[in-house]
Image (cartoon, rainbow, N blue to C red; front, side, top):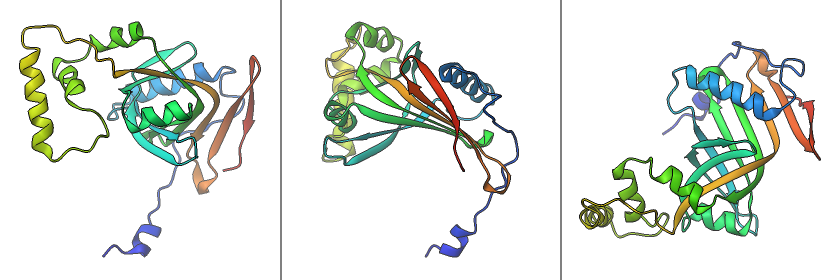
Length: 215
């Protein structure tokens, strides 16, 4: 049995860096790029991994880890099966949030906003860069659907492998990209004594308001 006292007693002292209203850039998109570049150059595993939170029209939440696959001037890009649970939730309620946890840097980065689909042309541009096996996997898996066992999906993969042997693999109609267009950012930097730095950007018409939040 897990010892709850052991879990409750887990502690880490945060002391690597600081964050202030004066040190961040006026544009959160540019500040995002600085933090992401630092994460990319830090050597940590999958710095582009982000938790994506969605919900149904009734407010029932869903959460999972996906990969950031592109940065547009107005948002952040990821890809999915359009028949998946997250896609169904986004169709019902396009409001969503992403969270990056870079624990080695003692940082979190939260972004919320509205999600829209990319065009088929934009999705195709990315799809053709994927490894062949990943493209086959896209065809083989109707994401989030119930399957009888592991053997079923492996046989589906083998079937499509044979079907497309020697040919270019087309983009399925049920797969493509999304872009989250931000209305709020929160940059979190771990600090001593749990007095963490939390700098928040809130969209105000064509500008951003910068505020500090209590830890």
